Image (cartoon, rainbow, N blue to C red):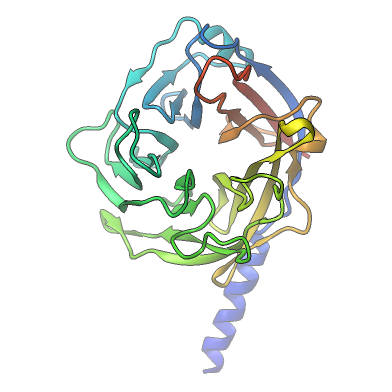
Length: 323
């Protein structure tokens, strides 16, 4: 019994040793041209693949881009007029790669109610063993009805060891209530060629970020990213109603650490987009590590400029750097 207790203490201290408080500062940004010019619109997912030095971007209307020769943020804007997407049937919200095996993961969020644009009302997470995908997908979370209107699965992270984390946008079924701020992330550990049964980890979502919105009062997690085996970055973003009924984006990036079966936030956000940017943030949805050979880590985020030609939104690429 004493040996077991001592071993547990060692494990706890090892986890704490790996944990680190993270803070970021604004480094750079670029905006693409307004619709209909260019191609990089509606971007909801972004991932960098070191093995090929390629950027993968996807939209929530089925477009998929693979870009190379990206050396700084302005290269995205330059390529927006010369690159063309692969058209798919998936409304992508997140894309990730297991960088050791090349396994390709993606999350999809369809409509809450069937409509003329999409009759599908499911959300799910699936993967292929290779990219480009071939054959039938394997499901980590099989297709299920959205837990709440426009609140499906938007976030995934894959650790260096291949562990997969999945977060619902505002909670799973039974968790999407404004008075309930505890939701759960799902962790899938590798087991042979597949994965073990999902393990739930509790997380306190901000239900007070956008109280004036009739649709965003639940708050939302729009992306997560692996820091190491014990830490994640969590992007919370929602739209609030500002003066004159205008939408005001409220977004914070949180560093969270595993404590037992709970994901604990740092006391302060790793970055507050509403106070840390020299411009107003938009609909931030995609997040990935920017490649750096040494020095401080950098983080790229991309916004979704949403369908329609009259909303005057532009795709934002934002680069943050670790303090």
